[in-house]
Image (tube, rainbow, N blue to C red; front, top):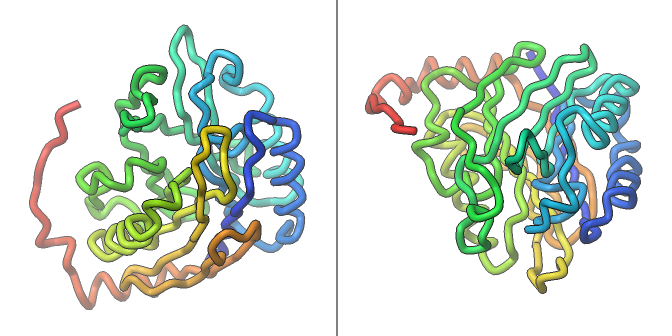
Length: 258
């Protein structure tokens, strides 16, 4: 079975939801009807802002409805993170919406303490793996990429998706860790990052890509370019690779203390 994955690399407009959603929708229009999954960056509707009081949404509101409409109208699953307030707590929440009216969410586990994210947002407690059209998906958000134990593949997923706002100053780390996660977990790895400069003066490089289980790059958007790219993955090829080179069966067992 083959599936098409589309990565979107925008120059996010600082804290401007309306313009960002319009921008992303325009970028998506080039692949409408010709992809299975669209992946957006971290906080794709606002940028990586530490202003959750003014930018948060309740579950199922504005941005969720926008994702739901796009998914239903164009027949693809769509995912990315944005700021959600539930009860009195703020979450950096990754949401996946399907055209079949299903949805899943994952709250960022590793909050970026150098940027004070841990002081404003609540840490996620649950790892998520779910299935969409037969593809088993495990989501991460940005900083999670540095913590391989959290994303260790227990033979329970096929693709790791990381939605990020990863700074240009650490571009080599981004590229290295994405490849490492794909190789060590014998999975496809999708990393989607933004470009441009935010209001804190932080520059972002992009380098969004889809990587195969051998560390090969399947699709990539060039650095500092607002663009879209689509790559095809094969579950049958992944299964064959895992059977002929069964690394995962020799992995160490462990338990994560939450």
